[in-house]
Length: 91
Image 1: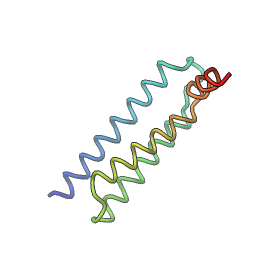
Image 2: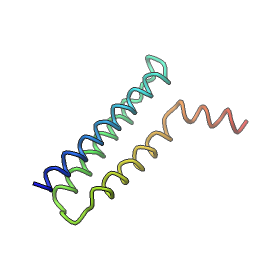
Image 3: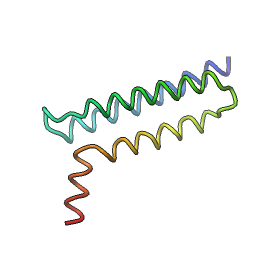
Image 4: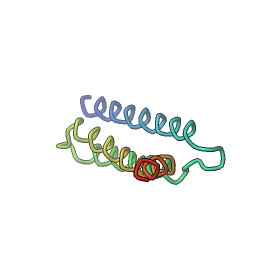
């Protein structure tokens, strides 16, 4: 029962993070420049982490959540609005 509960909590966190990423990109980018590829990468990464958590019981919930959070930050760094902001700061 604990294993199922932890998997559900991890899935809830991944869905929440992915939806917030999608909303932030929708607000920050133009209508034609939505990063569908980045959103797909987040979904596939989330599915991978959930399947690893399901398969290997020794992965802690905090490790799985932390790894997805870092992955989401890494994916967000390579979107167009963030790169444009970094270019504006540097020059």
